[in-house]
Length: 128
Ligand SMILES: [Zn+2]
Image (tube, rainbow, N blue to C red; front, side, top):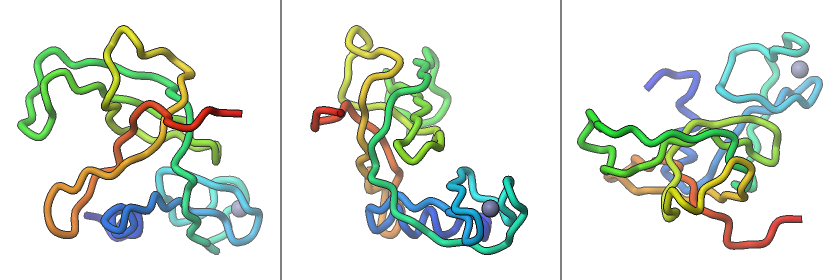
């Protein structure tokens, strides 16, 4: 775990999806960076994402090489409502029902003590 992203994993362990927001211009970014890519400020505020977004892209690997990746798992890139994209997994949906732009929400898969992975599933609350 690199220090730059440590806050993200500490937040995940507490079932919070944390993002960096520039303390100078307010730009929200992901993945974590030392300086704001917009104004180069080192000032950082951490904010908790609402955990909702839309499916931006997805893929189904047919030969998972990792034992932590369930067969049939969908890899997903989600565009959060805060405007950033995160790579994760999509669960709880069949391939027939998945489409780009569908509403999704975060949940946290507890892997072991102190380690949780942010995952996404179809949104349970209707989107605006
Ligand atoms: Zn900035």
